[in-house]
Length: 427
Image 1: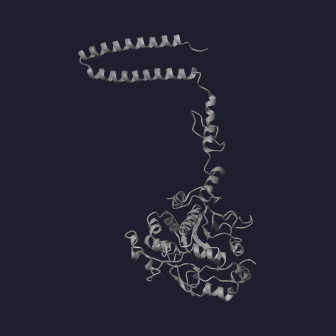
Image 2: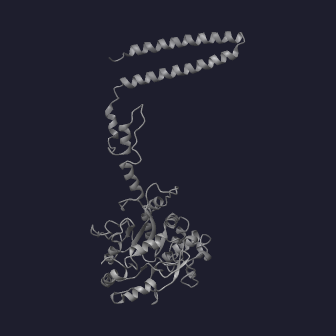
Image 3: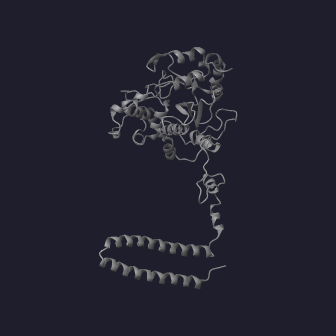
């Protein structure tokens, strides 16, 4: 039965009258206590009564507003429908369903399938395609856990990052290379944005393209693509080593040899050296000073391999990259100088100062030799495989190059013929 307004009004007037009488009696008692010299006791009483007075007023206020809220014709449960957009599987909806006013929320246990799936999605995203721009991507990829130990079983992987204009003409060779080693590698493809051809579902390259942008040879966009590949690969916390390859690259050894060589290495493989010629120091721009000085300046190969620690340093760089972007323009080629100089500035102790991708510059010119069908033989490949000596983990090694380029599509047939016996691939 609804409460009448006249009743509520009379009730409020009665309370106000009682309160007035209470204040008058309190005033008379205080004057009497002061005259009798017991002011300290009176102060204590006044404090206690003040607290009681505050509680009474607060109770009246809450009582009045709660009554108005209950009898108000504007209170409807359908207002809660504004939360109806919540997914029934969202964490907030689970909180609402499992929480009452007098009980704590029931949270899913850490080892539940939901938590495990969320952790897997965080540390190793299944889908490579995303809507992040480059700035958001670099920020996300630069996050580093401060815990030394991982809270899950972690088998380190090698990230193979392919920088390609479009299709991979030597994909069949790489398919044989990766066969039987799932869980030890990740693949990332950066292609021209207009290239939309997808590999078959049975291919290791299926859905391995990342959001890409146009790349111009010799321009800053080339380094942008390299950093983009690194950042996407860093999103997978299982990736420990990162190698940049092109569509013209081939492996010189089988997967097991290359995997062990990289995972067990104490250093990254970034070509970085001081070239006194006009194509080295001659490309230095004085406007880079003082951020980058001439003694800092280095040159190197575009094709690198880095450890996770160094990869994070590269995508996190906001100091040197803008300087190179502004002042290293043709005839200064950013892909030949930025990374070589950056590593020399930041972490020279982590670098071997050499590349593991072999190319032939003996014919001169702006580009290395492109090999065709007639060039491919076992003797030719063995020269690249074992024809050099280098330092590896403070020791001497005859295995210096793990990959080679540039191989024309016509080399695929002889490479597939030689691979089983020479490289140890499955026939």
